[in-house]
Image (cartoon, rainbow, N blue to C red; front, side, top):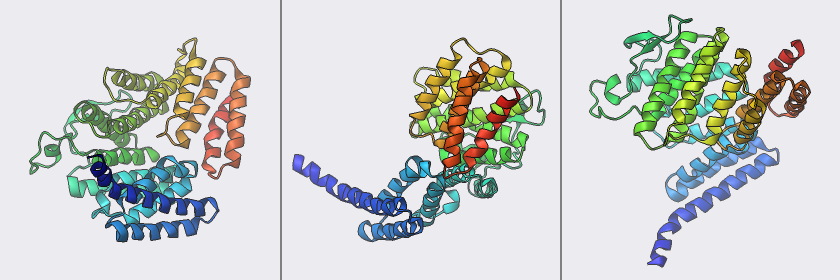
Length: 370
């Protein structure tokens, strides 16, 4: 029986070893400074996988992980190249509906400062939602349930579709929540709106995703931690809209809503995500004058947890250190605040991605003027 069981795993093991060997070839070229050759090798490897196994799914998954949380996280341009190669090599029949890879590409584009390209890709996703899922994120012709914010009367809480039949009266699975990849695209549409200061559309779509995430995490099991991570993006950007309009108390309440929600027993949340919410809320409390006495300890511990969290990329981890510096500065330890900022500035100056130098400017200006 044991031999039979082992034999059953041999095809998978052989494919896995093949895929890892092919990826190692790609990475060897990349680490040797031969990026173009590495990408050509990846194309060849994908073809070889299809010839050998009938599909490239195993290699596809390994390259995705590499792009998302390994070498593609340390070098965002490389990660972008890998995701674009995956998009071209995908076995899926309808690229326009593959919102997850589009969302990852948009994230990489933003991390290297290519906001316009990210918005163009997000627009394609919104068109796909309208065409294939009958979900309209542009006109948003859904029942008005009242205002989202007192300071932004045009932004409305709407009766957005949550289940398959809400957007498609011909659908037969009325009890099934909308597929998460579609809602991932909704969140991306919100970010594209935020990029250009379309507060109303951004706020409405972020609220839609936040409400969907709550329903999803209560009634579904796959990808719940991922959905919670993206839910924090929604709550965080709703908080940002409040702050930018001069309502920090509303911003703090947005993070508070998320923290209360995920603190419920059994709610799927990773420590890094909860720490990110707590640290972000602390920074808002600087303006409110309500920092707790142990704010520095909370901030430092939160940043350490974020740093160790696999699924946060460099932008989030870099931003968390900036937030720690802000907490030190607000609590009177300005020397330590500048020490952190100077360390980050030195790293940003030597970084392959110049976008990090832009991130460090705001705290440097704030500290210098205070």
